[in-house]
Image 1 (tube, rainbow, N blue to C red):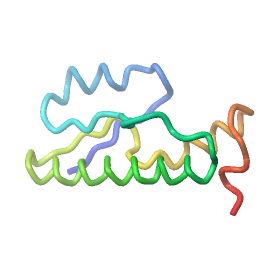
Image 2 (cartoon, rainbow, N blue to C red; image 1 turned 180 degrees about the horizontal axis):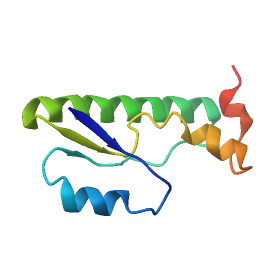
Image 3 (cartoon, helix red, strand yellow; image 1 turned 180 degrees about the vertical axis):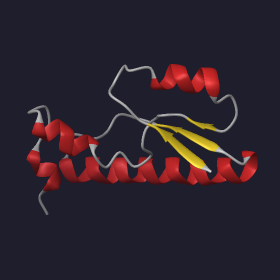
Length: 94
C-alpha cells in the first residue's frame, strides 16, 4: 500500500510521518535546486517526481507499506504558485 500524506506547507506532515510511520517513509526531497529556465525546471521536477515514485514502489515492495511525505509528482505545485502570483504561467505553456 502506498499512502500519501498531503496538506499545506508547515501543517505538520513531516512531523506526523516521523512519529507514526517509522518504516517505509519516502521523504520529500530534491537533490538540488531547480534550474531557472522553465523547460529545464519542468524536466527537473518530472525527474525528481519519477525518482520519488520509484522509491515509493520499492519501499512498498520491501516493507509492505510506503508513506510519502507529500505527492511524489507534485502536479499541483507549479499551478498553485502561478495562481497565487508567486510563479510563472510560462511553466504551463507548450
